[in-house]
Length: 211
Image 1: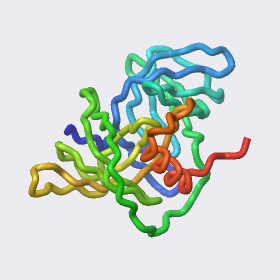
Image 2: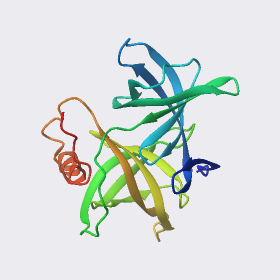
Image 3: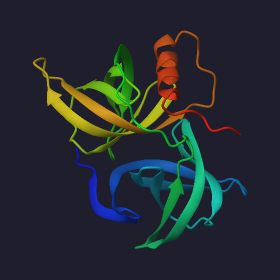
Image 4: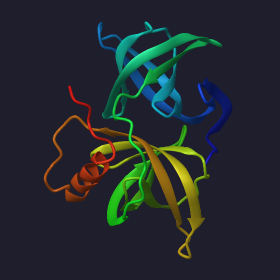
């Protein structure tokens, strides 16, 4: 797969923050007006996405970002010209700040899809989960430090690859650290028991904010 670590960094209070490149088609919807602008999700930093838009959206406004049947809410912090388009920085308001702890891994078999930049989805299997991340089995290698996006029946995840090795079967086993998790805003059929378990387990790390 194409490496997705962007040499460009954003400045932070404690030094440069790496920007992980994704290249996913999205729609950004302004909450106040309902106006929808298609764009390309170019990169992700902890708590924020960078979206390339064909036209500007107002800054300091609430918006939602839609990826297929998944979406998340946030604030447009910045939207300024960049080359022939507009670069928008939008927060991901899906989780409280939490620390990472070592926890047991739970073996599972959950079919999912990996979304490579500008490519067709790749069928993968989630083989274990913990509060810190996921274990994946997949037919292609993914590079350590690469940002990935994957989805099961009910959740969409942004994650960073922490290791990847080839198995004797020819498949690859990877461990990824989750950055953000998005849930479908529809009911999940009762027969999807593994995915309900997955959402519950991940929810312990990503508690919903009070409204």
